[in-house]
Length: 120
Image 1 (cartoon, rainbow, N blue to C red):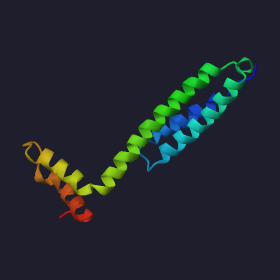
Image 2 (image 1 turned 180 degrees about the vertical axis):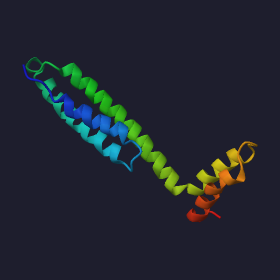
Image 3 (image 1 turned 90 degrees about the horizontal axis):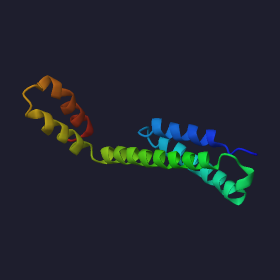
Image 4 (image 1 turned 120 degrees about the horizontal axis):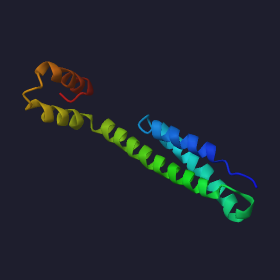
């Protein structure tokens, strides 16, 4: 019996998990994993008797889908931050400004980042 190539799908899915917040890199790896898994499952569905690890490929495809979802969430958060930096920084400042344990010196980098982003 032949075996389907689950290793490539698992490796690309793990890369997708690890790179889920790295400028869309995780999304690319997860999409490639999903395409490979779909092609391999298509071969398996055409002739299931010829392959011994069809269930493992189904699991690998599920892992690739989860990796893709997490990578898309990470990419969405990155895009939201990029287009909404001022609200992001202001939210942090509002959350910590009333805390007596947070000093102005600790908030200074946030104020500097707001100035660099053109929010002030």
